[in-house]
Image (cartoon, rainbow, N blue to C red):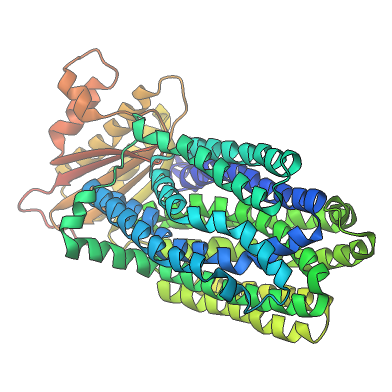
Length: 591
C-alpha cells in the first residue's frame, strides 16, 4: 500500500508550472495595479483641479493614444513569445538576434507613424470631436505623450524581453517608481504650478522616463541572459524573417487594438452625441475602472505568455495547460472582485471624481451597468494573449473579430437608446464574446494544444525526497521495459534519472524542491528533461572543479559518464537539465 502511494505521488501535476505562473502573475499584478491606480489618480486630479472638461479631453484623446498600443501589439507583442520559444528549443543566439531585429523595426516604424500624427492631429480630432475648445484641450494633453512614444516603445520592448529572465520584481519596481513619480509630478505640475492638462501629460512622460531607467538597469545585472544582437541588420533576410514572424504573432493583438480603436471611436462618438461633455466625463470614469481590470489582466497574461510559450517550445503540452488555467483563474477572480467593489460603492466612486451633483446618480447607474462586463473582459484578455503563445493565430483572429465587432454594433444600437443603452449594449457584447470562447474551449477540451506528445514515454512531478526518488526509479525502469528497450539500457536510464534527482536534491539541502521530469523517445535514444525550482546549478561546471567532496559530485560524474549529451540552462528562475542517452546500435524498441 505504501509503495502504491509513493508511485501515485510522482505522476505529473500542475504544482511547478502553475505555481511559477501564479508567482510571476502576482508580481505583475502588483505593478499593473500601481499603473491602474495612477490612471485613476490622474483622472481624479483632472476632475478636482481642472474640471469635467479635462476628463472629457482624456476620454477624447483615447483613439489617438490607441495608435501607440496598436503598433505595440503589431511589433512588440511577439518579442518575448518568439524569444522564449527559441530558448525553449535551446537556441539562445537566435533569441538575441530576434531581440535586436525587433528593436530596430520598432524604432523605425514608430518614427514613421508618429511624426505625421503630430502634424495632423487637429484634423484627425475633428473627425469625432465637435467642440473646438475641447479639441485644443485634447492637443495640450496628447502631444507630449505622442512625441515620447517612439522612445518609450523601445524601452517597453526591452522590458518585455527581460521577462525571460524572470525579473518580475524588477519590473514591478519600475512600475512603482513610475507611478509614485507620476503622482508627485501631477501634484507639482497641476496642483502647484497650474499647468492644467498639459501638466498631466508631462507628469506621465517624466515619470515614465525615470521608471524605465530602473528597468534598464537589468543590462548590468548578472542575472541577464539576453542581449539584443544588432548585427542582424547586416543579414537583411534573416532580420526580415524575424520581423515577419513577430508581426504574425502580433497580428491578432493588432486586429484586437484596431477594432478596439474603432469601437472606442464609435462609443465615444455615440456618448458625445447623446450626453455631450457630461457623457464623456462619465465615459472617462468608466474607462478608468475598465483600465484597472485590463491592466491587472494584462499583468497575468504577461506571466502566462512566457510560461506557456516556454512549455510550448519544449512540447510540454501539460505545462501549457497548467499555465493557462492558473492565469485564467486569476483573471476571473480580478473581474469579480472589481465587480463587487463597484456594485457596492458606485456612488462614492462617482463622487470622488468631483463631477457635479446632477451627474453623480447617472454616473453611478452607468458604472453599475458597465462593470458587469469586467469578468468577461478579464477572461478574453488572458485568452487572446495566450493563443499566440501556442501559435493559434487564425483562431485568435476569429475570437478578436467576435470580441470587438459585437461592441461596435452594440454601440451603434445603443446610440438610439440613450447613455444607459450604450453601456448595456457594451455589457451584452462582451458577455456574448466570452460565451463564444467558452464554447470553443469546451469543444476543444485541451486548450488548443495536443492532448499529449506521442513520443512521450512518461512525465512526473515529485518532491525530491529519497523515498519518492526510489519509487520513481523503479517506475522508470518498468515503463522502459514495457516499451521493449533492452534491460541494460533500462537500468542505465533509470540510474541516470535517479542520480539527476539526487544531484538536484543535494544542491538544495535545506529546501523542498519540486521537479518535473519528462522522457521522450527518439530513433536512436531517449531524452530526459528535468525542470526544477531550486537554486541554480550546473553539473558541467561542478565536474570541471574536480572536487570529490562537493555535494552531488559523484552523481554529476555518473550523469556525464553515462549520457551522450548534457545541456543546462536557467530560464524564468527554473533550472532546465537535458540528458540524452543513446541506444545500443543493435537495439530497436517497440514504439
